[in-house]
Image 1 (spheres, rainbow, N blue to C red):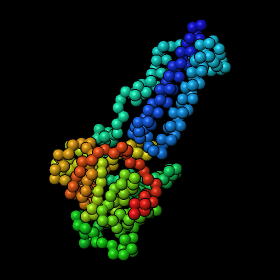
Image 2: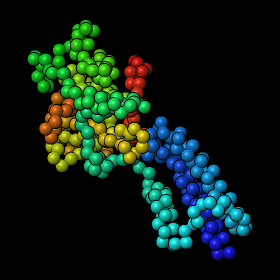
Image 3: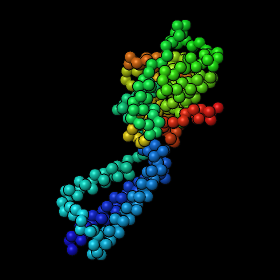
Image 4: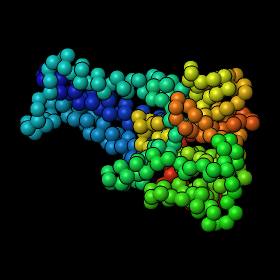
Length: 326
């Protein structure tokens, strides 16, 4: 009789744990908080997983009832359940602890605290943006390509002067010459952005726009730009500096990487960390911690409400997004 109660307890406890995880996913989906943890392209799989977990929970509940009724619940070919209270506590605790943390802690987007741990990336072109399913060799090649330096500044152009305008399509192609096939999309994006009066960094193609500007930054000196994100600041930044950034997520929040742009504004120190702002200004060359970067010389900074979807995601068809914008 005691063995029956032990088996019943194990199956019942497994039922509760599986129902807990299934319910947690449902709660996140209903409250729109799932986006804080999972990229949109993965949400469908997670929602399907919640249904499967529910089915498994029902099966475990059925096994618990069979054990309670004294009916066999296994084929005697499985490893018997543990009788050790310590071992059971540790085993189930590893599952219960993250579940409790998920339910008890508030669902919030990543912020400056996580940036301080990971470090802010101010050079988007040095991050690999690979296509889905790309083989390892392709990824390695892409990483090498995105580290390529920007084209040299023409002799008549100083660091903060507007570059010579491209008068023809041939001139434009020379300005945005791709050294290899991995930079071709960035080159095409750059040519489209170059023709705009104001570059609006849309969340849908956030990384792609910043990567193109970073890769060909000398071609955009003096260009007007609009960018939104949260404020991040480090101790060694001057009073007129802060970074406006966003977290780029490929799969889930575990792989989230912060990317941003240095902002130069006279009263920058009056804006607190994690405030969401929209910055309007012009692109200039800059340097931070010995690295050549582009900065935004801000002319206007507006406080905005944090977006419902705070992260940005890789866009593997950025040219279509730009065409749709036009």
